[in-house]
Image 1 (cartoon, rainbow, N blue to C red):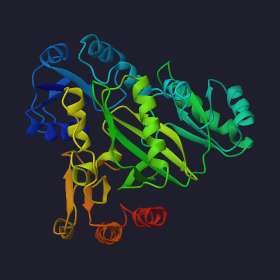
Image 2: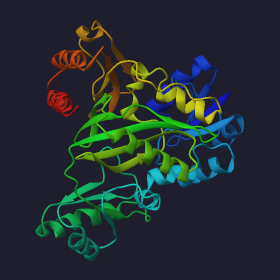
Image 3: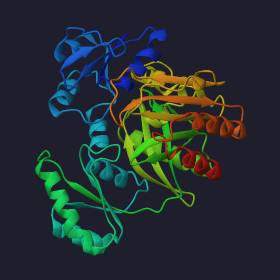
Image 4: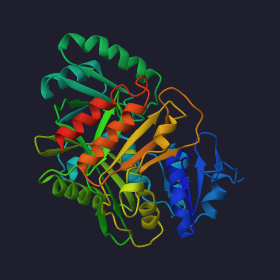
Length: 381
């Protein structure tokens, strides 16, 4: 079976690696260069988008921000899973918020902003502080602003106006209530063509400057699993979803509020490569190809550290027990996701010790917040 993935980054690469043992061939369409490549070797497949769509048995995606013409062609093929509706829901915060409201899944109070006066009204209606997010194209902390007091409205709106002037005409701003959350949680799950679904154990996440730095599983706490399962069920059924879906939450005193959804395999699920019986990448392929889902049971407590802007590690890390390194084969660039490390241990105590040992070997200049993130997880779990 052949799967065409829209997007040719590390997620397509890891899908290809996971699909090979199942005899599933993955090729990737780079939406920027308009070339079809093998996502591991980067060999050009010499196929146009139309040819690649015809050649594939299934079409899927590794990210939400797909140009409209490519999305339209893919949907017209009749092979696209999870489909254009789901991709748009993950790529446009206006659609995402409407979906969450329709299925009664808790999320932060919000308002759509198109003018400075809208922003003033949002401050009055929702209250301060506010988080402002671009409706389109915002990810990894990009396209976000904060208003803490009314005196900041004019300067913040000036920045937003400049941003909007350089954006697509469909762009807008979402004003959200600032949530003083206890921690960030995500759930990764998969839904089959027949509607059956399952989720992995919840994951504790820590971000630095809007970019994921550390994920640790499991992160369950009382009723959180059931809340996450209910949200996954409602959202995936409303979208008639097929494949892996990620949902990011704020944990507010035991109440989960959705921060955002991602209609794809997700950075906070990379730990499943070593920590679960079947990883998220294989389960996504199983789902879209019509195969039975694999077990999502936890093998051992597992953590993932993102490697940002570096392309080498101290030799000592390679010799550490149950420490697994994944490089993406990218050209080094400041802040770029270059790879990740997965770390397993028999229990939480052992995992904490292993995480601290790895952190001590990493350069402080590149991982300044890691020790604090590890401590935060240790105290919250």
